Length: 220
Image 1 (cartoon, helix red, strand yellow):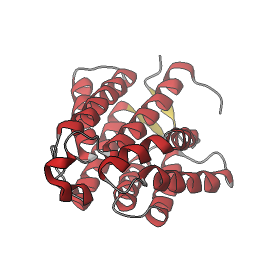
Image 2: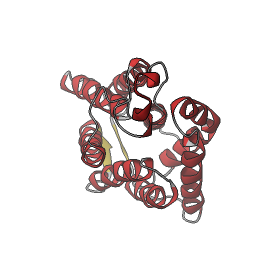
Image 3: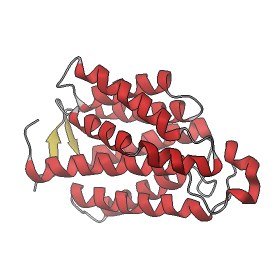
Protein backbone atom coordinates (compact mmCIF):
# COMPACT_ATOMS: atom_id res chain seq x y z
CA UNK A 1 0.00 0.00 0.00
CA UNK A 2 1.28 3.43 -0.94
CA UNK A 3 1.43 6.15 1.70
CA UNK A 4 1.47 9.13 -0.67
CA UNK A 5 0.63 9.96 -4.27
CA UNK A 6 1.18 12.53 -6.98
CA UNK A 7 -1.71 15.01 -6.92
CA UNK A 8 -0.74 17.06 -9.96
CA UNK A 9 -3.66 15.48 -11.84
CA UNK A 10 -6.17 14.64 -9.12
CA UNK A 11 -9.29 16.66 -9.92
CA UNK A 12 -11.18 13.35 -9.82
CA UNK A 13 -11.23 13.72 -6.02
CA UNK A 14 -13.49 16.73 -6.44
CA UNK A 15 -15.49 15.00 -9.17
CA UNK A 16 -16.19 12.17 -6.70
CA UNK A 17 -17.19 14.81 -4.16
CA UNK A 18 -19.67 16.36 -6.57
CA UNK A 19 -21.27 12.96 -7.14
CA UNK A 20 -21.56 12.40 -3.38
CA UNK A 21 -23.25 15.75 -2.75
CA UNK A 22 -25.67 15.37 -5.65
CA UNK A 23 -26.53 11.83 -4.56
CA UNK A 24 -27.50 13.18 -1.14
CA UNK A 25 -29.28 16.33 -2.29
CA UNK A 26 -32.74 15.29 -1.09
CA UNK A 27 -31.38 13.81 2.14
CA UNK A 28 -29.60 17.05 3.08
CA UNK A 29 -32.68 19.15 2.34
CA UNK A 30 -34.84 16.78 4.37
CA UNK A 31 -32.47 17.07 7.33
CA UNK A 32 -32.42 20.85 6.96
CA UNK A 33 -36.19 21.00 6.79
CA UNK A 34 -36.51 19.82 10.38
CA UNK A 35 -35.02 22.98 11.91
CA UNK A 36 -34.01 25.12 8.93
CA UNK A 37 -35.16 26.34 5.53
CA UNK A 38 -35.02 22.93 3.90
CA UNK A 39 -32.80 24.10 1.06
CA UNK A 40 -29.34 22.98 2.17
CA UNK A 41 -29.21 20.06 -0.24
CA UNK A 42 -30.49 22.21 -3.10
CA UNK A 43 -27.90 24.91 -2.50
CA UNK A 44 -25.04 22.48 -2.04
CA UNK A 45 -26.00 20.58 -5.18
CA UNK A 46 -26.22 23.81 -7.15
CA UNK A 47 -22.75 24.95 -6.15
CA UNK A 48 -21.03 21.60 -6.56
CA UNK A 49 -22.70 20.99 -9.91
CA UNK A 50 -21.45 24.34 -11.17
CA UNK A 51 -17.97 23.34 -10.10
CA UNK A 52 -18.30 20.12 -12.08
CA UNK A 53 -19.23 22.09 -15.17
CA UNK A 54 -16.12 24.22 -14.78
CA UNK A 55 -13.85 21.24 -14.19
CA UNK A 56 -15.22 19.62 -17.35
CA UNK A 57 -13.81 22.51 -19.39
CA UNK A 58 -10.27 21.58 -18.38
CA UNK A 59 -9.56 18.05 -17.22
CA UNK A 60 -6.49 16.92 -15.36
CA UNK A 61 -6.10 19.73 -12.84
CA UNK A 62 -4.13 19.36 -9.65
CA UNK A 63 -6.03 18.64 -6.45
CA UNK A 64 -5.13 22.12 -5.22
CA UNK A 65 -6.42 23.60 -8.47
CA UNK A 66 -9.69 21.66 -8.24
CA UNK A 67 -10.21 22.75 -4.64
CA UNK A 68 -9.56 26.34 -5.69
CA UNK A 69 -12.20 26.04 -8.42
CA UNK A 70 -14.63 24.66 -5.86
CA UNK A 71 -13.85 27.56 -3.52
CA UNK A 72 -14.59 30.13 -6.20
CA UNK A 73 -17.90 28.54 -7.15
CA UNK A 74 -19.09 28.05 -3.57
CA UNK A 75 -18.35 31.66 -2.68
CA UNK A 76 -20.49 32.77 -5.62
CA UNK A 77 -23.12 30.07 -5.89
CA UNK A 78 -24.31 29.08 -2.40
CA UNK A 79 -26.50 31.36 -0.34
CA UNK A 80 -26.46 31.92 3.38
CA UNK A 81 -23.51 31.13 5.62
CA UNK A 82 -22.48 27.84 4.03
CA UNK A 83 -20.99 29.43 0.91
CA UNK A 84 -18.33 31.43 2.79
CA UNK A 85 -17.73 28.60 5.28
CA UNK A 86 -17.18 25.85 2.72
CA UNK A 87 -15.57 28.28 0.30
CA UNK A 88 -12.98 29.25 2.90
CA UNK A 89 -12.47 25.61 3.84
CA UNK A 90 -11.56 24.58 0.30
CA UNK A 91 -9.61 27.77 -0.42
CA UNK A 92 -7.24 27.24 2.50
CA UNK A 93 -7.10 23.47 1.98
CA UNK A 94 -6.02 24.10 -1.61
CA UNK A 95 -3.49 26.74 -0.64
CA UNK A 96 -1.68 24.33 1.67
CA UNK A 97 -1.77 21.50 -0.88
CA UNK A 98 -0.39 23.82 -3.57
CA UNK A 99 2.94 23.98 -1.74
CA UNK A 100 3.81 20.44 -2.93
CA UNK A 101 3.06 17.95 -5.70
CA UNK A 102 3.05 14.85 -3.50
CA UNK A 103 0.29 14.37 -0.94
CA UNK A 104 1.19 12.45 2.20
CA UNK A 105 -0.44 12.05 5.59
CA UNK A 106 1.43 14.95 7.18
CA UNK A 107 0.55 17.41 4.43
CA UNK A 108 -3.08 16.32 4.52
CA UNK A 109 -3.22 16.99 8.27
CA UNK A 110 -1.64 20.41 7.84
CA UNK A 111 -4.16 21.29 5.13
CA UNK A 112 -7.12 19.96 7.11
CA UNK A 113 -6.09 21.85 10.25
CA UNK A 114 -5.58 25.12 8.40
CA UNK A 115 -8.93 24.74 6.63
CA UNK A 116 -10.75 24.11 9.91
CA UNK A 117 -9.07 27.15 11.46
CA UNK A 118 -10.39 29.23 8.55
CA UNK A 119 -13.93 27.95 9.12
CA UNK A 120 -13.79 28.75 12.83
CA UNK A 121 -12.43 32.21 12.15
CA UNK A 122 -15.43 33.02 9.96
CA UNK A 123 -18.17 31.30 11.92
CA UNK A 124 -16.86 31.58 15.49
CA UNK A 125 -18.57 28.25 16.29
CA UNK A 126 -17.31 25.79 18.87
CA UNK A 127 -17.94 22.12 19.51
CA UNK A 128 -21.38 21.81 21.07
CA UNK A 129 -22.99 24.65 19.13
CA UNK A 130 -24.68 22.23 16.70
CA UNK A 131 -22.79 23.19 13.54
CA UNK A 132 -20.39 21.62 11.07
CA UNK A 133 -17.65 22.28 13.65
CA UNK A 134 -19.07 19.34 15.62
CA UNK A 135 -18.02 17.17 12.67
CA UNK A 136 -14.75 18.91 11.80
CA UNK A 137 -13.02 19.07 15.19
CA UNK A 138 -13.47 15.41 16.16
CA UNK A 139 -12.39 14.44 12.64
CA UNK A 140 -9.21 16.51 12.89
CA UNK A 141 -8.40 15.28 16.39
CA UNK A 142 -8.88 11.63 15.46
CA UNK A 143 -6.71 12.02 12.38
CA UNK A 144 -4.01 13.68 14.47
CA UNK A 145 -4.11 10.92 17.05
CA UNK A 146 -3.73 8.25 14.37
CA UNK A 147 -0.93 10.27 12.78
CA UNK A 148 0.91 10.58 16.11
CA UNK A 149 0.63 6.81 16.55
CA UNK A 150 2.42 6.26 13.25
CA UNK A 151 -0.60 4.86 11.44
CA UNK A 152 -0.66 4.73 7.65
CA UNK A 153 -2.24 7.51 5.59
CA UNK A 154 -5.22 5.26 4.84
CA UNK A 155 -5.78 4.41 8.51
CA UNK A 156 -5.53 8.08 9.46
CA UNK A 157 -8.28 8.79 6.94
CA UNK A 158 -10.39 5.97 8.38
CA UNK A 159 -10.00 7.41 11.87
CA UNK A 160 -11.01 10.83 10.56
CA UNK A 161 -14.14 9.51 8.85
CA UNK A 162 -15.25 7.46 11.85
CA UNK A 163 -14.90 10.45 14.18
CA UNK A 164 -16.61 12.74 11.68
CA UNK A 165 -19.64 10.46 11.60
CA UNK A 166 -19.78 10.32 15.40
CA UNK A 167 -19.51 14.09 15.54
CA UNK A 168 -22.34 14.46 13.04
CA UNK A 169 -24.55 12.10 15.04
CA UNK A 170 -23.80 14.03 18.23
CA UNK A 171 -25.57 17.11 16.86
CA UNK A 172 -28.95 15.39 17.23
CA UNK A 173 -28.81 15.76 21.02
CA UNK A 174 -27.54 19.34 20.92
CA UNK A 175 -29.42 22.63 21.12
CA UNK A 176 -28.53 25.01 18.30
CA UNK A 177 -26.65 28.06 19.54
CA UNK A 178 -25.64 29.64 16.24
CA UNK A 179 -27.57 30.43 13.07
CA UNK A 180 -31.25 30.33 12.17
CA UNK A 181 -31.91 27.14 14.13
CA UNK A 182 -30.80 28.85 17.37
CA UNK A 183 -34.10 30.75 17.34
CA UNK A 184 -35.88 27.48 18.05
CA UNK A 185 -34.14 27.04 21.38
CA UNK A 186 -34.81 23.62 22.90
CA UNK A 187 -37.01 22.71 19.93
CA UNK A 188 -33.82 22.29 17.89
CA UNK A 189 -32.90 19.27 20.03
CA UNK A 190 -33.64 15.94 18.36
CA UNK A 191 -32.68 16.89 14.81
CA UNK A 192 -29.33 16.52 13.08
CA UNK A 193 -27.56 19.66 11.91
CA UNK A 194 -27.62 19.78 8.11
CA UNK A 195 -24.23 21.47 7.82
CA UNK A 196 -22.68 18.82 10.02
CA UNK A 197 -24.21 16.16 7.75
CA UNK A 198 -22.88 17.68 4.53
CA UNK A 199 -19.50 18.13 6.21
CA UNK A 200 -19.40 14.43 7.05
CA UNK A 201 -20.28 13.54 3.45
CA UNK A 202 -17.46 15.77 2.22
CA UNK A 203 -14.84 14.26 4.52
CA UNK A 204 -16.11 10.74 3.83
CA UNK A 205 -15.91 11.26 0.07
CA UNK A 206 -12.44 12.81 0.15
CA UNK A 207 -11.15 10.01 2.38
CA UNK A 208 -12.69 7.30 0.21
CA UNK A 209 -11.25 8.77 -2.99
CA UNK A 210 -7.77 9.07 -1.51
CA UNK A 211 -7.90 5.57 -0.06
CA UNK A 212 -8.83 4.17 -3.45
CA UNK A 213 -5.75 5.77 -4.96
CA UNK A 214 -3.52 4.66 -2.11
CA UNK A 215 -4.74 1.08 -2.43
CA UNK A 216 -5.09 0.66 -6.19
CA UNK A 217 -3.35 3.48 -8.03
CA UNK A 218 -6.20 3.61 -10.58
CA UNK A 219 -5.88 5.39 -13.89
CA UNK A 220 -8.03 8.48 -14.22
